[in-house]
Image (tube, rainbow, N blue to C red; front, side, top):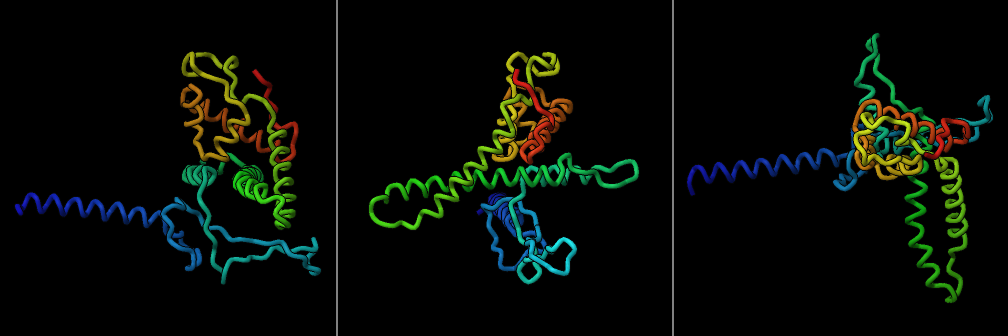
Length: 247
């Protein structure tokens, strides 16, 4: 075995170790999380959060108190999403006074976006169980009545949120000059398509623009952020928040 060959083998081994170390680093729960949370490469980037629960409290003025329920005081971990990314990017920007910047979305907007994502993912997964229950019908009590009631209620909540989003257009072709759009192939970006792309599929605003033939400019990204914020407000129950007309 020549020296050159040994060096090549050693270099490849070092590169492979570095690759595996990077995977393990990304998969390891972030600092502050409980030691029982396993290393899980499939989980992807994570953020720590402290679970809370609202409990009755006669001594509190509101009659309720918020209590931490993290295991032995440790934080829990959840998969990071695009709103975490935007918050980190904003925090790196400093204002004139040197203070960290703020996310373009309010806490209420982020909460309703995550609620919508969780509802849709759980409802889609529940559809498989519904098919299984339907296949077993006629073979006696299946114990699926409560599940079906919850499944139907969940579907109604998703439908309500989508009605609130509406059938408007976040980016209308006819409102933007061709030089600003990016070309003749630019297509309208519907409000519901924008919400699903960002909240459900974790797409970036740049990816949404590219998929619809728009230029990746600061102006177009800002327009999508504004449109999404208005959609999220309507999903919370503010019907007059930035209603977009169809093109």
